[in-house]
Image (cartoon, rainbow, N blue to C red; front, side, top):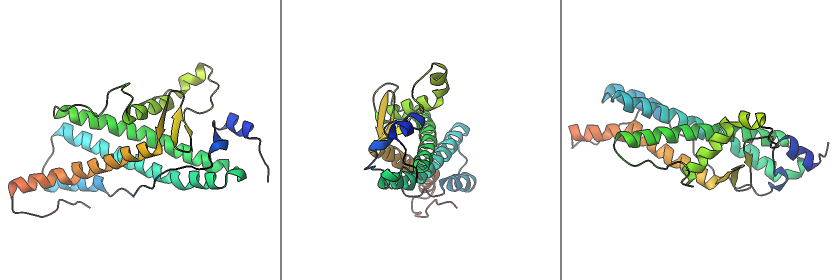
Amino acid sequence: MIQWNWDILEEQIAPRMRTLNQVHIPELEPMPNYRGSLMLNSVLIAKLPTKHHKLFSIFIRRVQVATDHYRAAIDPIRQFSHELEAQKFGLYITALNNLEICVLNAHIASCCGNSLLNLIGQRPSYTNNDGSDYDRLRRLNNRIKHFNEDIVAGTDINTPMWITNDGLSCIDCDLSFDELHEILNCAVTDCEGFSEGYFKDIMDLRNPASNIPAEGL
């Protein structure tokens, strides 16, 4: 087995790979089929206003992708960390690829969430540069999306985002796995509300005595 110099791996793949000896990434439960619930309930119970339906649908789809790819990153990065000296860098790359997709879709979902809050006259969950976890998610997203500009500018970093023991980092921010996990958990809860809770409230208004759940497929 080839034993690589860590300097070479970190130059060609990502910074700080040699430090990943205790990666802490929480488990995340599979997301139920809230997209199916939204489709069924919007046909059988109530037709949503067009803007609401569009944002609900986009939000749920993006959260589904984000949670799927977060979950797909867990086993590879844990295995890479547990067998660090084996230098199974393919596992690291698999985890990083999945986490990049997670970040991109989680940020789009958060933008949809803010648009929905704006529709009902409530304050956004974050604002740009407020330093919150959602704002740092936005910064990670921007680094990934605009990495082409970094390449043109001659950056000496070979990836827009990298993994640490506690979370994700880029050149201007850090986001812990605990924070990302909380963002995704809250988003999944919102998906349930958009696809089932919203329609249950409508049914309760029509028939206060009804306890029939508005569950979809």
